[in-house]
Image (cartoon, rainbow, N blue to C red; front, side):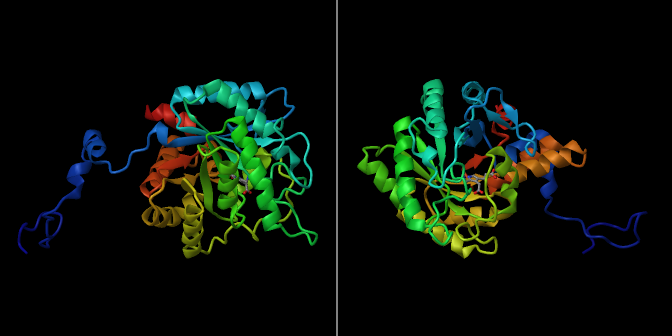
Length: 337
Ligand code: PBG
C-alpha cells in the first residue's frame, strides 16, 4: 500500500487505517452517545445491616462507610436510600441471641422480621424490600443451616427452617426473599411454604450461584459472624462454571423469580453465561470484599475511587446483570441521577 508517503518521522510507507474507531471516542458527548451500557439507580440494591439492642449505629471496620444500624437509624437510612433512587434494599440482621437452630430467624419479634416490618412501614412500596433468607446470622455455630449429629450441615432439616423463615418474612411484609444458604431444594421449599401460607405474591430472588468466596470476609464483621471453618460443603467451588448453570436452571425450575450470581467481579463469566441462559432477571452481588478492596486502595491513594466504582458497576451490568447489589448503591444512585 502506498497511501501515505514517507514522513520525516519514518522512512517507511506506514499504512494509514481506513477504519478509525477513535472517531467515536473524540468527545465526552460522543462517548456518552455510543455507550452500550448504562447503570441507573433503579438497578441498584443496597444491602443493610441492623443489629438488635444497638443504641448507636456502629461502623464496620473492614467496610469503611458501612454501618450496623439501630432500628431507628435503619429506618432513616432506608428513607435516604429511597430518596436517592435505589431500586431495592436487602436486609441482614444481627440478633442479640444465637442458638443451634437459629430460632431468631423465625421469631416474628426477631431482629430481621422486625426490621422488615419497620422498613415496610417506613417506605411502603416506594422501593423493593428484600430479606436475606439464611440462618448464619442466627446460629451460634455460624453455619447457614442446622447441623446433623456428625456436625455436617443437614440439608433437609435446614429446608424446614427456611420454609418457616420465608413465611415469617412474608408475614413481616417483605416483597422478596433471598434464600442464600445454597441448600439443595431451597427454592422449592420456600416457594411451596409461601404459597401454602397464602403469600403467593411474595417473590424469590434466589442466590443461585453462590461461591465459597474469600471475598465475603468483611461481611463476617458486619454480621458478627460466629463461623469457624468454611462453607465449602454447600457454597460452590470457584473452579466451576457449568455447575453454576445447573444451579441456576434448578432454581428457575423450582420457581425462582430472579436469580443471583455472587460474588460479582471474579464471576463475570458466570453472570454472562447465566444471562444468556435464562429469561428471568439476573442479579449480581458486589460483595463486601469487592467493596473493601476498592475502599482500601483508594484510602491509600492507589486507585481513583469514583472511577473505579463506576467501572466495576458498569462491568457487572455489561456482563448481563440487570440488578446489582452494592454497598455503594446510595452514592452511585445519587451520582447517576
Ligand atoms: C449469608 C450471606 C453471606 C453474604 C450474603 N449472604 C455470607 C456468607 O455466605 O458467608 C455475603 C455478602 C458480602 O460479603 O457482602 N447470609
